[in-house]
Length: 104
Length: 168
Image 1 (cartoon, each protein chain N blue to C red):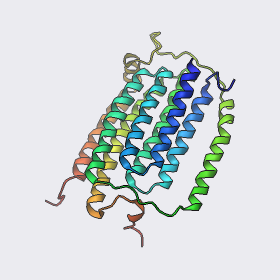
Image 2: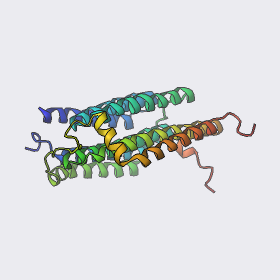
Image 3: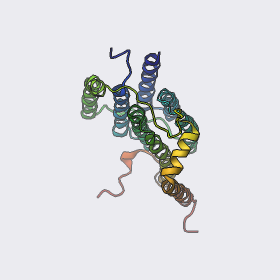
Image 4: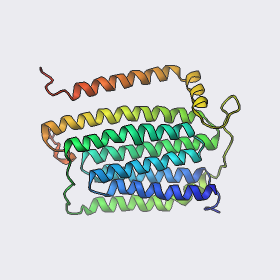
C-alpha cells in the first residue's frame, strides 16, 4: 500500500530527507565550496516540496514560486562564488574553520 | 508504473545527494550534484512541471554547475585532509538521520491526498512554458521585474568583488 500508491506524503518525505542530507553537509564539511553545494541541496529540497504541494493541492502558482527560487539561487551562487574567490585570494584557503579573522 | 518511477528516482536522488556530502574530492562532489539535479528534473516531470524540469536542467545542472566547476579549477582546491572523527557531530547527525528515518512513514501517512487537477486557466494541464508564462505575467509582473533588477545587481556585485585591485 505504502509502496504502490504515491501520495503527497511520499514527495514531502523525500524532500525532508534531501533537506536533512543537505543540512548534514552544511554542518559537517569544512570547505566553503562543499558548503555552498549543500546549500543548493537545501534549496532543491524546498523546490521539490513546493512543486509537490502545488501539484497535489491544485495550486499552479507554486511553480511560479519555484521559478523565482531558481532565479534567486543562481544569483546567490554567482555572488557566493565571487566572495569565495575573493577570500581565496587573501587567505589562500577555502576551509571555513580557518576564516576566523573576526574572532577575538 | 508511476510508483516504480517514483521509487527509482527517489532512491537515485538520495544516493546522489549523500555522495555530494560524503566524497572528499570537490570535482566528484560537483558531478554528483549535477546527477542529483538531473534526477530532480525527472521528478518534476512526474509532477507535471515540464517547463520547470527544463529550467532545472538548463539553469541548475548547466549554468550553475559550470560555475562551480570553473571555480574548482580556478582555485585548484585539493582534497580535504582527513581529520580525526568528531564523535559529537557524528552522533548528532546520526540522531537526526535516525529521527528522519523513523519519521518518514509518519509523514507519508499524514498526507494521504491524491492528485488534484491543476487549474491553469485555459484548461491546459501540462505545466508548459505557455501555461507558466501566462500565470507569471498575469499575476507576478512586478516580482518578475524585481528579479531582473536583482540579477543585474548580482552581476555588478560579482564584477566589483572579483576585480584584481579595487583601489586602482
